[in-house]
Amino acid sequence: MKKILVMGREAIKNHIKGPVTLHVLERIEKHPPPEDIRTIPRIVKESCIMCGTCVKVCPTHCLGMEKDNKDNGMIWLQRAQCMWCGHCQTYCPKDAIHIDREPALSNSLFSFNNRQDYEMICAKGSYKGEMTDKKLEELIEEGGRIMKQFEELRG
Image (cartoon, rainbow, N blue to C red):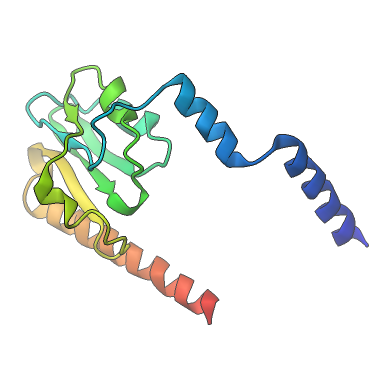
């Protein structure tokens, strides 16, 4: 009986709130994305100050960052989660992120494989070279574990 009451309460709450998609569409109407968005973000490493604004404003949490200071850090992207909204470009205080229509990227854009879709988009200081390769391998392994969990759930 308790489960039925909990489910009923959730159903009523969700009915009152309305579809989640409508809330996202309202936000997009207030803050329209740039017209040139159809590929993943690119960072100008020389301009990036590792402030983390792009990571904070990302609505899908596809950007991640690890840093020691402004001259030593990395920003990575999970392409499958990116919805090309352009918030990272809009809110970057140094205009270090650009979303353009680079045709070379369009072929790899829609692979959506958690094991392969992590990409380093900025690495500075000691995070260049082996450190970035090591972190990418860790992320790819984590994606592989997530994919295995999905496969186990599907049966």
